[in-house]
Every structure is written in C-alpha cells, then in structure tokens.
Length: 97
Figure: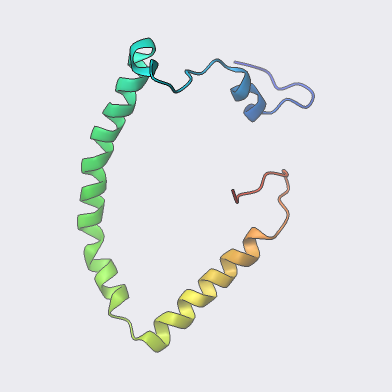
C-alpha cells in the first residue's frame, strides 16, 4: 500500500504502476489480462441481458407517458445535468471528457 505524501494522488500512483500496453503482442505477452477481459465480457453479457429483460416493463411505462408531460421532464433533467457540469469541482477533477 502506498502512502499519499505531498501532492501525490491515487491517480498519480496509478500512472506510475506498470501496465500492459496495447499492441499486436498484447495477448501473447499478457495472456492473463487478455483472458480476464474476455471472461469479464462473458460474465457481464448475460447479466446485462437479464437486467434489460427485467427493466422492459418500466421503460414501456416511460414511453407510454404523454408527450406534454414527458418532453418538459426530459428537458428539466437535461438542464439540471448541464448546470451541474459547469460547476467547479472541489477536488479540481472535471466529470466531462
């Protein structure tokens, strides 16, 4: 475990750790990482299909809402998110890319 001293942040410590670089030899040089990515996909895909199947009824109800109610609600949520994105962060890290 690294101790945070001075201006070091967890992000800085992560940048210093050696990570496998992508490239044509990635799978042969780092098979455990490559197969871990494949395994994560194979595990996540059925879980996401299950989540989608369970949420279809909810989204059908959202689509069934009258447009005079739905459109202003979506616009308000978009405006709230837009105003949130322009506020300065306490830690100086922006959420927008």
